[in-house]
Image (cartoon, rainbow over all chains, first blue to last red; front, side, top):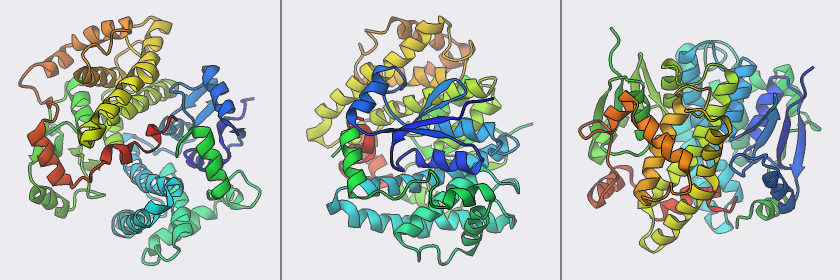
Length: 223
Length: 238
């Protein structure tokens, strides 16, 4: 019987959350070991567990995987969420990378100094409604299928729906003119594994608050 | 007969260079359509082939692929440079993602504000020699093989050579503490397709000079201080 994957990160979303979503959507139970202090991170580094001295790190199948994308690629391939051939994979990758670009803006927004927040927020809203949402709505419209690629659930749908939730937290009106995205969100949210993950008490993490931001700053030593 | 892939970018390295390296190493001939002004770039955007209005874009096998990693993964998989199984793919992914962190820093360096250049260069070199290069030196030492993963040439080897050469442009002696990387550099450079790419007259692009820096800034409308902004969490000690 295989061990459960073990996630090493701090107790917050950050760069680990998309990994949690993907594992959960794939129906894979996982454990988490939270880094709660700079000393905890130092220990992981000194153990030689972190290839580039960074987290996320996921212990899975005898490996200590680092680099968010390496981890996500492995999980997606292993659990058949990466399309049926390299062309489908290319489309999935294109969509996933676009999602990641917007997600990155939102991540950096959550940790940026107060003085920069307004400008960043304006850019996020603009990019969301003028660049990214139209691109994904167009894909869904072009084939009229339930999922982004190959008429089958893939990581692209999971990452996009995760992103839709974050955008909603920022401004729930931004999705207003994108009916197909709304439908995808509803459809994916109703999948049993995803529905379970969306319930209170799951391993899904809440948005960053003052306290967890201070904790993250201490652990990861940024201002 | 398959058409050659067609690369859309400006006439410089940027995010397209790793793609050029990978295609060249795989022995795949490619064409390039290189824009030189903001107007030409906007024309490309209006053409509707750029999913997120961004480049790189590569026309390949009937697709208009955008997003650097999507393009690289497709090429690597198509030309057997992505390992033989899932685990090898994971190792390659870890290695290339680490290399991208380093090469991004080097790529953005010319955009440093003048007063930050010295500090940024020192930071790049420190990271190269204490965080990144030791990883690859150790990998080669641990298995004693000629290539990083699976005892055969992969995307990871090609990108490692590319990044080594970029780092040497910052400081020629940067590999001085890494004997296995020095051997690796020589060995991979001698692979015929790669050797050809390293010759003058190939589609390999030179580093940006003052003039092309201005061109790039005009085309992509960069802001000041973009180095630090883009380094985000990398700049933190983390």
